[in-house]
Length: 605
Image (cartoon, rainbow, N blue to C red; front, side):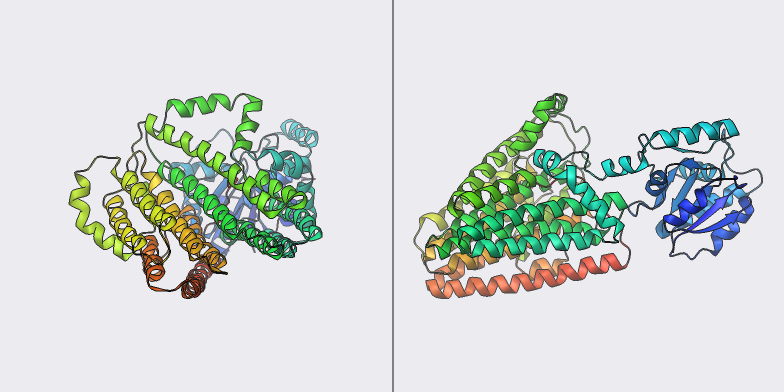
């Protein structure tokens, strides 16, 4: 149980003690710095601890933001400071300084909590200070100031601010105007009944899976029900994040579940639509797989670009400046957010088209919309990369190398090509990745099934992939290397399965790409959570992108079409089992050991 140490002379009529208890703190009273240090030493090291001035006046939500957010080891607001176990030592040192003769810091006010915060700053500790906005948090020095602070508290509706802050500051048009106006109240309803964001996330997944099942019936009633349930699933998807912000229930496991389930819901729904279309005699599995490939590659573009420029220096360009100017014009903001077809717009389009049209029309619209948005966003990022003079760090190069997902074959070949790679121009990495990928995809698409040419192209692809990663990925356009690898692998599987022209090959390919895509998303979420890439044994076990591509081409050359379908199914199951078991093990273990909570405020494309 977290502990709050209330310091200083109690103020008659103050509600601070009851407010701290309502936030889950066990409250202890301390008369001064020496007493506070003694009580601090008694608090178990695995518990959160807070030091709060007894004269504090402010909104309960200001206290909640300052003292209960699990994402930050150290946090402070005026009159209060808190530390999680990871930062306990820093707080103890600062407290000891303030208990020494004369204290370690001189402030205009005599609040012990504020002096501790200043001591932490002096020590170079990273103290989070939440944006309070109109919320009040103060330590009045006299009765008149206390009265003024209380009047300021009464003038602002704490609950209204809390509800408003539960909604993302930056969201899509559909989410902002058609979902959030009421989903925030669902989030509050859930909070008051003790529901957790992870429970709501799970409910959203179950709803989407039921929607996929309805779509799989292939009936008009099933399609209508599927569209309605998909929207309901998205409402719950918004609600879980709003509940996390409303109640500050952030966690590493929750962030992973939210991101992973979003992909599982969307791709399961694609499969449901394809099954429903098949019941009506229309085979759209190639379209479903194409939609998954396109959507996943769009995300990889986002992830790679962001990681490449995460901590780049001199990170400016005329294109970025133009984008910033457009953001100051209200209507352009919403147009630009809708053009990229974020999850709200995308799911709304899928739901409406499912209910009113056919799966084939739904997939055509989805592919056209996603292709346009992918072209728009990628072109803008290429322009930014070419026009900015940015120096990219070793951390960025490492992240791009991890996202590349190179296996043992590419790594071995890359070691032999390092000398050659150093002598080549900076554009080499993305250029050879593109050319090698285009070669293997084109031969898979344009030659007959069972021929040797895809296998030859896969060997070329292995060599070009090795050359692409033979030196650190620090070039202006090197962030394109992982997306090129993803497109090459996924599209090769798609075209070889289509060329097999046997019933069930494309659904098997859909399963294999879904399993591999999960591995690639899992890599992204680990990097975002500062946990590093998946272990090398996992990457080697599943072969890396070039190894899997080579194996698929070998199987296509050696097996008959029915045997190839069976091989795809076996590979899909094997890859899914290995990556899922390792992923679940990692994230559950990270949650149990108290890994720093993360929360992504951005909306995935």
